[in-house]
Every structure is written in structure tokens, then in C-alpha cells.
Image (cartoon, rainbow, N blue to C red; front, top):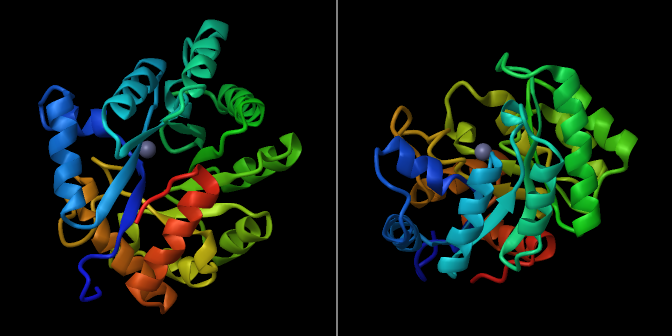
Length: 270
Ligand SMILES: [Zn+2]
């Protein structure tokens, strides 16, 4: 932490609508303004709110339109793909044209929850990769217990120019493979957990220009708030955990993150 105040960063992946829902509140403009105001006081001056259904994507784009410090990502989460049809993709593509939409996400594979067939997930992941390429937007990948298939499908399809692994959960070997492919790894609060030495070792193997930090709020709350809902204002704990794992100063990592935000998402902060 510098004398100038908290390091200026942005939250690369959050769910403002799910935060409200989890708190039993309506996801109003006032709710978003409160969340972002509390975040700004901690140096978290912008956030990408991520859709996981078509309806959620619609909400994210509206929230981004109403708040200068909120950006949106649009996609359907691999566990929510049932019923996603051509009309759904057409709406995602229409939403993606909004100037505040900075990524196609979150999309990918989730073999942890037994809710949708892997074959169907893979087909929809391929369609989202195509959407990212056609719109020229970065791809924001969800990969839960599916590392090999996610990497294989990206290779088979040909990855979009910018790929971000949200809530990266791989080991050193996978981190190296991602960096070699030019992918960016976004680290969540898990990096602060006592039982996450593998993730810290992975972070130590990643050059600073390939890292981002995220909350995935209301999930993945960093230590010592684990067990309570996450929020963008808690992101500095994850920045410090990541910097410690990398053997760098938080300010130094924050500066690299701001540059990566500009390069990948076109975000100009700080
Ligand atoms: Zn998420």
C-alpha cells in the first residue's frame, strides 16, 4: 500500500445482480451505486459485471449503461445452457454491440455441477468462441474441473485474440501453458485460502502482464471474510494475496493489472 492511498485496480469478474439476490435485495441502480461507492473507497474504481443467462446479460448491459464505473460481459454459463437457442445467441450478439460490453463471458465448461451434459457444454462453448471472434471481444472462460477439454477446444477452434481464464484454478503446468498461448489468468479470493498452495505456486509462475484479480462476488470471498458474501470492496485482499504469491509489491502488480485492463478490455482506469 503506497502513501498515495490504496492501489487502484478493477474487478475483472463480478456478479452485481447475484450479489443483490444473495442479500435479498432488488438489483436497483441505488444498490449498484452503493456497491461501487464502497469499492471505490478501497481503490477498486471499476468492475466488469458478468452475465450467466440471457436475462442476466441484459441486466448487466443496462447496469453498465447506468454507471460509468461498471462494464459488462455477456454469455450463458455452461450450467445454464438448457434452452439456449438461435434467438438467445442473436440477443447475446445484439447486446455485445453495446459500447460498455468488454467481453463474451462467462462461457466454458463446468464438470463439477452435474446439471448439463459435457457434450452440450462443449458445443455451446464453441459457439461462444465463435461469437467472441466475430464481435472482436475477449473471451472470458469459466473452467471448473475441465482444464484439458477447455484448452483442447480453444486449440481446435483457434482462440480469440484475447482470452481470460476467470477464477483460474490450474497448477503451474497449466499456468505455463496458458501464458505460452498468450492467455490472461484472473485470480480470485481463493489465492488467500490456507489450503491453496497449488494456486499460489501457479501465480508465482505467471508474468505480471498476464494476471488480473477478480471477486466473482458474491462467491469466493477472500480470507478473513470467507463464509460471508463477497463484494468488490474486498478485492484488495486478493491483490495482496496474489502479490505475495508472486513475490512482488501490491502497487507493482496493480500497475501491471491496469495495463492489462487497457490492453485486453480497453479499460482506462487510474
Ligand atoms: Zn462468475
